[in-house]
Length: 453
Ligand code: ADP
Ligand code: ADP
Ligand code: MG
Image (cartoon, rainbow, N blue to C red; front, side):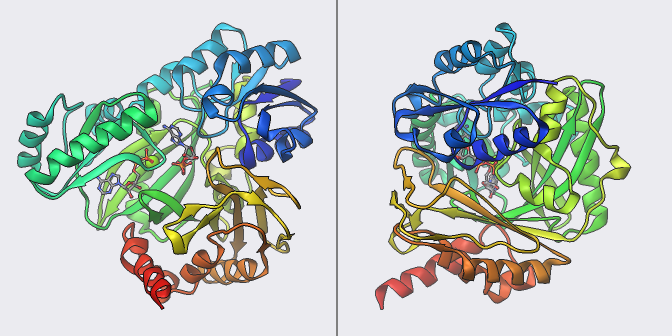
């Protein structure tokens, strides 16, 4: 087992990883940008190294500085968290070349699945259903128009390198396809430095269902069941739940597809296979080759620590439990707490905290970077915490989340707390009657209405 791990990330996920290292008896090295000097992950780690300026490009994306920090502190492994370098095959390879264990899959797995149109291709090859669309990348607008005609409008133009809900545009006809093609390309070049696009049929009102997997170096492939992440805003998850409401027969088919996908690429470490579900049909959309934001809800219902397993797998150990030992217990919901103002177009709201009160109690977990008088930085993602509850069933989990949101106090900055509370009180949400269109159809209008009063 490793003696020392460097965490190449910031915020709540860095804190979350450090906490598991602490109880496993592993020393930790935090890295930070100049503006993150006083942040929680820096304070909790045994050592901390400044890796550059505020901009991600200069620090959390600065591969050389991060590798140097690992070498200089004698860290044997790097955990990349999510976002930043977590799905960067070049970084994983650099770690491999420097003899540092990358706590994640091999660079070849990231290469195979990181490019979404290649991943799509691979799934077609092994007969995992994908959304109807282009075979692979589309080279130009003419090709896009041709394929769109075949599959029928509306279509979705997607970036091969996309992530975090960016680089995706819907087109309802040939005219809007032109626009969608160009804006998706520009956004993808800007966000990912890669403007490659592919095309999918736009699935009307689907649910987003994903499966958590763990795979070790001994060909053990274990799944930890599913999460429903259908409550989204602009294709970005807002609320997630596990195990979700899903027919067992459909679930078993999806588990089979998930395991098949992992085995086909001989995958290693933690990963997630994401699907869209429409009626009784399901379609692969992508694989995330890293720990995900919403992993805690799976931890709540299975009692397993996914980060602990990631570390064990990377150090060459076997997964510490069998498939039969993964038993779903109760129901869990996560709300992403963002520093943003829903009444003003969800604009980010950085600034200094005045008062903070965190709910706790039976089955309540708050993974966060916050502490009193902390200043939320404008340079990074606006997610500042995740409120997670665990109840005996969905009904109890919803009620617990409501109570926890009532108790949570974050003063000094704007957050989406009331917006989340509104969802927890929405009759359709309570009934489980929702899909990915829920927020845009039902809630944003409500907000506009409020604003005009
Ligand atoms: P999850 O799949 O874990 O729910 P998200 O899609 O919400 O994750 O992304 C998690 C974090 O990683 C967000 O901060 C998001 O902005 C960032 N992220 C995801 N994919 C990429 C990517 N390809 N490039 C840069 N950042 C990304
Ligand atoms: P990202 O890499 O940004 O996470 P995904 O491909 O996982 O992108 O898609 C994110 C979300 O966008 C999905 O959960 C879904 O809500 C929506 N989406 C993606 N593809 C389609 C599609 N073909 N039809 C309808 N919605 C889609
Ligand atoms: Mg996704």
